Image (tube, rainbow, N blue to C red; front, side, top):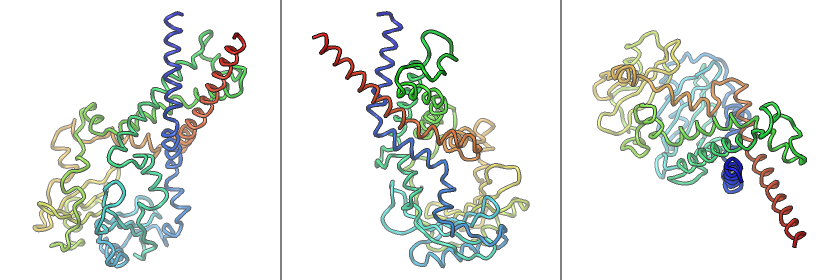
Length: 379
């Protein structure tokens, strides 16, 4: 047996055991990824009334939306954030913190309100963590496994990448060029031909999705690899601190103070101060031509403006100015703002592992049956 043959046998075993051993975990991971490409259309279909706005203009003061949301929340939740529409026709979204036990993954339970921009009328309220699309997000992000689920998904991403690499090796024709491998009739079995044909067309996209998923699942390691600033720990003190029961500044005063630093910018979001060392309003200002809003921080006790996110990054120099890699990895993996072609590719690539896994296992079982039959025949 030559070295190349031994190596091929090794890759076949690796490819087989990844497909057979991890199929139960990889199918929900990949299928939920396919469905989440259409997260927004699914939401708009299931909850059309939340998006039934009466016009595109969010012309009212932000505190009108805040008051409407808090009135809708009542005693169930306390307002923590107001997000203005990102696109014309979208509703204003307000978020409130529900006191008591945490929700899934240890995060605080929240209540959302969808508000009509022209009238400040509340269209709906709901705890989105309990809704179908958010359940899909939790399955895809952690397989619903407490504490270590995100890391498990990351290692499954490495396994999927190994499956793509070994599959490409095994697919490559041993005699003939690349184009020969694209023929349908490479084998006598329809399952064999289907497995090879689907596998080669989804191999590269699936490998890309696997690696971007690994980046997202291991943020500390990934950022260190690219020399980027570390994200705050998931259990950092104060990360999920509750909102102040009573603020010194009103929301209107905080927004006016923030806007005075950049009068031409539009308000994108307002975050209410939380309990901590120095409770601070965080106001996002969207400037035309910039992808992300600039965050301006206003100290609640004094009304003083402190360095926001964009200012602090700029002061640390060009290398630390912005983390462009992490948002890019997220967009590639989710398909957001990547166009319908890439979204369709993600959708198909997410469904492919189920087909490849099932056809691979059936081929393996058939091969074992043939070998047993030959051994009995020789005996």
